[in-house]
Every structure is written in structure tokens, then in C-alpha cells.
Image (tube, rainbow, N blue to C red; front, side, top):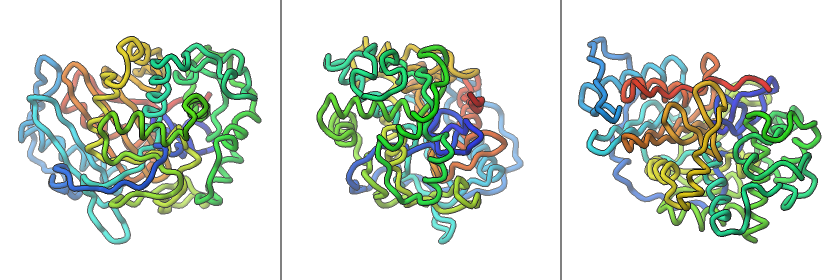
Length: 419
């Protein structure tokens, strides 16, 4: 569920759920936003350091399952995050955890730029990878609420040339049950992207990489995280609305949600201030700076950009369905088993009660979660996609944090097995 699942042997860019390859642009496009001051920007910036040897007691969760964010719990979180940062060799990370009546934890650790040593700070814009999927699917579901599309419409009604297009429904695309091949797992795509990461890709070019492969299974037979599905849904939104996807999302999703620094870029533009991103999904296999790579290859699956305050707000909007009718939101949250410990609905997952999505694309990772029982929000943003011991970096942080604040609901997301 990150914008990149490391899901194939090819190492291709995949905007995904769990560990993935270059997960496409985690957030579709828009014009550069003007970044203004925010209270989060004044939170202390932390640098990685050796964990304090002083033991602290494990917090006792309240009846809603979420621990009070006391000074002792804050120290535990600091130590746990520093440990992940050091062990996984992650340049920098931004973390926010909060719940009404329980306190607020906002911290940044490490560096935003390895060349200059500039520290990571909570006010930075970041590429969000597959969290983009939550915006694209929300746009689609708004059209469902408007009566302009039906979730059980076949994709062939809107897009020609789709294998099994007369039988694959919009619902199956949004739920990752189409059976289509993931274009970002195609070897030719991976070579094209890594040989010239500044080049633009069109949606049709992305589909062509997918459609040259046979379908993997019959529609709705199983779960398979696939960026191709979102490219198709983005095209549906464009065709039905009559406007470019990024413009529709910014007008009908981002603005009504009250988000101020969330954009769907049309190219490599990246609003300031932003962190530098680092990836090993490169032609050489060496770690390189991917900050200015063109995210068009991720488009509706992973091209978007956002910041901490916006994503904290979006986590609740997404999970509670503020922009949708209750009936449509209920369909969105009707999850089916995806991988062990996780269910997937329509562009959204439920992991041990935490509802949201993760994202990953070359150089960046994200995790945006909401726990309804405690009305708790957890957001993690980092400037690398390089995994550690088979795990997405965002998963490492999510697990470490929830072991402390919600020990009965620990966020863990194993890598998707090859399909």
C-alpha cells in the first residue's frame, strides 16, 4: 500500500501498498503551492542520536486503546524513531502522532539534504507516492455520488483496449482485484525510467507497458496491488469530468478538504521548501538523488506532493468520508483480505484498525493513518524509499510507533509476495 510495493523481481517502479518498487508518482499534479508558516514548523527538530539507556515503563493504553502522550511516552517515541533511523540508515523522517485529549507529538529527525547537512524539519513539502491513490479514488467516488459513473460499470465503457475490459469493473480496479499486469513491474518500463528519470510519460504509454502482458487472473479472483488500475481510474475521471485529472482533484478533492499545500504536479516541479530524496532504484544500482525526477510515470497512482499539516487533516477526512455520502464511504471501507493482517477496500487499507494508505516512490516514503476508536492520527514522511530487511521504511516507523501508542493495534505490513 505504499506507492511502491517491492512486488516483483524486476525492481520496477511501483506505487504500492507494502514494499514495492519505484512506486509511481505518489501524488498527482498541480501548480507549485506557496508555502506559508505553520505551527508544525515550530516543533523541535531532532537529530539521530544514541538511544538513552534509561528504561521507561511501557504505557498503559486507555479504554480507546491509545496511550496518553506523556513525557515518558514521548521519550519512548524519540528513542524508537532514532533506532529505526540509525538501523535502516534513513536520512531523515518527519512524524506526527496525536489523538484528542491524549496530546500531540510532532518531531523531525535526521537530515533533509545529505550534501549540506540541512536538518529535516516538519514544514517540508514531500512526494507522497501511493497516498495519491486515495485522492484519485476519492475523485472517482465523488463522481459515483453525482450519479455520473457506477462502481460496477466495466472499464471498457470508458477506456478502449483494456484486456478483459468488458468484465473488469471500476470497483475491481479500485480494490486491486482486476488481474491486470502492473506496468511498473515491466522490465522495459524500469529501464526507460531509470535511464532517463526526467522524461515524461503519458498515461497511454504506461498502459502499453501493462497490456503487452497477459492478464494474471480472472477479474475479482484475488488481490494484486497494481498501479495500472489507478491509471485507468484516472482516465475515467478525466473522461467523465471533462477536465485534467490533476485539476479535478485539486478543485473537487483538495480544496473542499481544506488542504493548502497539496498539489498534483504536471512535471518535476516541487514546491519549496522540500527535502532531497534518495533512492537505489537507479540504472547503476547505486544510491542517487531523485528529488527532481519527473513523477509523471506515477500519475494517478503516485505523483502528488503534500506536507505534514495537510496529511494530518487528510487522514481524518479520508477515513471518515467527509467528502462522500455515508453509503459510498461504507462501500469504500468494505475491505477484503489482501495480505496477512491487512484488508483493502477501495483505494484504502485497514491494518489492525488503522485506516489509510502508505506511499513510496524513488526517494520518498509516506504513511497516512487514522484510528477511528481513538480519533487518532499518525503521519510519517521520509526522504528515502530504500528498504531494510525486506520492509518498507514507512512500515518500520509505523510498527515502532504503534507498539508504543497502540500496543493492541500494531501497524505491520509484510511485503507482498510475488504474483
